[in-house]
Amino acid sequence: MSVRIAALWSVTGQWLVFVLNFAVSVILARYLLPPSAVGTYSVGFAAAAMISTLQDFGLSRFLLRSEELTDQMIATCTTITLCVGAAICAVIAGLSLPAAWYYQNTQLVPIMVLIGGAFLLLPLNVVPVALLQRAVDFRTLSLVGLCAAAANGVVSILFAWRGYGPVALALGFFAQQAVRGVTAALLSPRGMRWTPSFKGARPVISFGGGTTVLAISGALGTRSPDLIIGRVLGMRAVGLFGRAAGMVDGLRTLLDGGISSVFYSHFAQLIRTKRRLDGVYLDLVACYTSIMWPAMILLSLLATPIVTLVYGTGWREAADAMRWVALSELVFFALPLHTEVPLLSGHLKELLVRNVLDTAAALICLLCLVRFGLEAAAIARLVYGGIWFFIYLGMMRRIVGFARTALFATHARSGLCTLAACLPAAVFSHGGTILTISIAVGSMIVGAGLWLVALALLRHPTWRELERGVEMIRPYLPRRATI
Image (cartoon, rainbow, N blue to C red; front, side, top):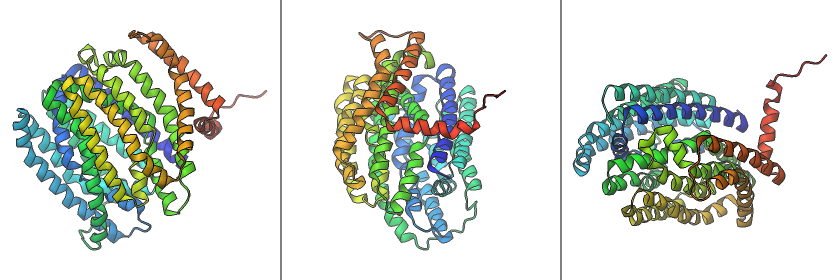
């Protein structure tokens, strides 16, 4: 499957999953669960996630970067995932009582036990999905993701309606993991055949050990906000912050559409064949920034009408946090694949050092600002983003081979396109004016037109990709009848 066809399947699948997850989140937030219930689940999930980062144990990346795969290697990797999953389950279940005592919330016990139990299904999840990624079979991966999301939505809504509160979300997570594992295993190129074995485990464990340290360090940075905010500001604040971050993450998923997974597999092929990375990477940066930057700035500008329209006035405070979380994404999209490319190219040790610095920066920024309230906690993410960029810039430049001037020139072109796209909304919302839905939609439509004009005038790489996309679908468009 070519990169563009794989990207098309990945985008389609991610969009369908996004629509389904978004609809479920709206139903839960508007009719079934208050912010405090969502916050309770978020804290339980964040606490479990500190341990569950071990789940992959680097096996997906190990399988993707291996030049040859044998049945023995796959059997060994599957056996290791079973052991890791059982250990994660035991630790998360054991931490449920201390977490409930620390936060004075007994609902955390069943939430964390259910989340831990889901990791017993790891052998069905990790290796089959990695094999599908290696085969660049994103059509099947899209089907797997859609089935898992459907299971999550149905179970969460059903049990929330029956009065299970935040436990309903944990039941939905368990159902999601079960369905994902079964469908991935059934549709994997190797099927569900498996013979327990530890033969040849040493290189797998050696690689997995390093990536596990990396995952733990990353989890401290990504999951600690829920835990810290929950302790300092309470469960309601966690729910509001989680909904704000979830809206930003949902938009990223909608626009990314899983393209990063496709490029991860593509970069793995480039590295295995020892081809140059700089040109491909700069094109990726250009496409990401020209699309994600306008989207995130518009989300920041229109945060209040979007939150109140989607979730209702009870969640309005989430808009204050969402503005800053959305702006922080501008920095992270400016240097994509900052973990994946170093791992694939064998720079694990250097990546580990920078990841520790990255995590320390995230925690320090949050701890310094969270005492001033929810909005300040969101601002901390933007401050951290600026530090993050310079932590990874030098390493990525050496590995990929791009020049700083070339990267910043790419950013500048995307910045001009972003300015064109966001100008109407910025003008209408000048002075803090809260836009009505009709004006917000109109400003986005006008901005989209200006964005296309800017792409064409600058001959931006995204414009070239749009032209290629039109050429791909042209044969399928209806032709005008001739007389």
